Amino acid sequence: MEVTFPYGKDDVTLRVPDGALVYDSRFPQPAADAAETVLNALREPIAAAPLREALAARRPGPVVVVVSDVTRPIPYARFLAGLLAEIEAAGVARDEVTLLVATGMHRSSTPAEREAMYGDAAQEFRVIDHDAADGAAFVELPGRSWSGSRVRLNRLYVAAGFRLVTGLVEPHFMAGFSGGRKAVCPGLCSLETIRSFHGADFLGNPLARNASLSGNPCHEEALSIARMAPPDFSLNVVLNRRREVVRAFAGDLEKAHDAACRFVRKCACPTVSAEADVVVTSSGGHPLDGTFYQCVKGLVSCLPAVRRGGAVISFGACDEGVGSPEYAELMATYAGRWRDFLADIREPGAFTKDQWELQLHARALEKVGEDNLHFVSDGLTREVLARLSLHGHGAAAGSVGSEVQELLDRAVASGSKVAVIPEGPYCAPLAPGT
Image (cartoon, helix red, strand yellow):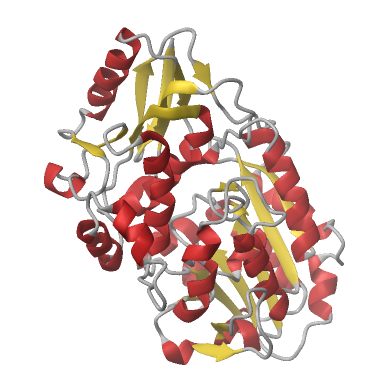
């Protein structure tokens, strides 16, 4: 049979054995277009007053609408205008509204990316990218987080007269599910605050994984920080494989997010029927597979579906390269020495930006080994791939499909049992009982 996988802004179609296990999400069809779906959620929220009524009781100060950055495929251009119109209808002037991009530790957006992602709102409203490295952009909150850490959050967000957070709920390989509280932490945190959220101890916890919330330290920390400067209203959307909004959950931060997580778990977290010898997975396509840093999500999310000592075949466009300079340097420093890395990050005071991605990457290395962790890309050179602690395959432009097909055919010829995850990390198979 033929199975289609997203790759960059295109697709790759592979010939897969008829007996292969295929893990796909199972979302319902959208009941309405994105604008109507979101508007209905804003007017009939969960455990909260409708948005217009909530805005009537706002504090003095601007309305800050927190939006996700360009690494998330949220089709804001299809519904953001309606959300902003609802805010204006509550008597809020446009110059009182700021769109604050929750970049976390990611880079800032370009003008072209803002226009493509947010539509006309990028020109009609003030848009500001959060910058985790800008010390003047933060205010320290009273109290401590769940882990006992001091918390510094974006000053504009904290001082707002009304805080509205938006996001996408999908399986998340360390926080259980994305969305909800993650718009605040790590979305609007300082680097120092993120140290705990992405620290070695947190990510070493087996509950820091897909679809896990109870007892997950990443979730507990993020939620505790969001509660310290709570949003007044939240909106989370859920997307199908075609990036259509199938559901919107609005209202109370925690209750609306919980409802969204339950829905996504049912639709996008199938139970593994049997561990395969080889798993073939995408990295989610554009925009997620723009850097190898983000592609690690696919390498890790597929692990419940593969046996220990088996093989993973993954691929991603990486048209923006490896990731941040700090991450690229970290990967080069510990190329082939991931066990040394795991030991070094346990040393007192040890911390490097983006180290968490290599720590999660190590989960795949521990299960299948470096030689069996295959990654194919036409966006990275063979020299760069050789520094990524895996079995890299540099493909010529346009030949990724044939390169992956060759690896898959070899596995099939050897008698290996195959599983495929076309959507990559957007579909997260879970071990039975988890």
